[in-house]
Length: 330
Image 1 (cartoon, one colour):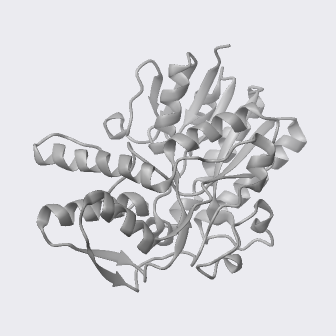
Image 2: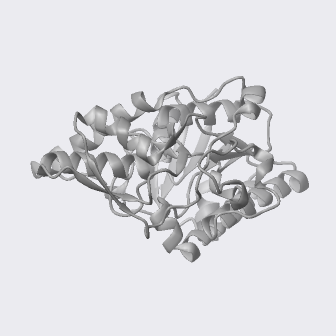
């Protein structure tokens, strides 16, 4: 059955892929983002594409009216460099979730998904590179990433209380480092996979095979390919599970290991200049997928080498296009 669906933040990376998928399934999709249309990563044919600031209550009510479902993917975010240097800006995203929840209640919207983050997890559980994967319960006692993580954790609680008090159907997903084509790959908001792909491509082009690496490279993370992210969102929305749930691949890798994989894809060996004063985030983080396997019978499947090869090829194409004088989104 066709639904009318709002994708808030649909001019961004995950939102663009989600909106495209929903349109292809025959849904009536309204895509809203604060960025000018020419800065959207994907402008979806067949969708209603709207430029509006969802920090404003009126914009949220206008965007939500008449919709059956809301996917709230809108927020100020980026890689660790952006998060650590823009804490107040990240926290202002609380306005988006507040006003969208109010609008969803007002218009009796059937389902509401909030995109949270692994940054909600307690810092004292992420102090070593070889860590136990993080379970959903590890968000408490609360000690999230300052700024961005606190906003995400507070918004999770707000979603839960709207569900309890007003009978809304809420879904809360904690993303673990989503990557892939049609996303940010330079400019300060990009995450590690895209940043390292770009650095290695540029090093290969210049012939100077030295790249800058933030930290000693031993910090560990897990990274999920965008196709798995969209599949997980779909399965979660179709389920009856409403508590926060990890959506990430359980394949942990160090930043140095990530560089090794990308270097192999590029066919080069790079020297690493480690900047120990650069933002690094927590020492180790990985996704425990016990709950998602239990509730959805599935977990992210695309391995790092496969996903990174596709991401590398896409970023390389953008750099080549720009060298030919074409306009690209980065």
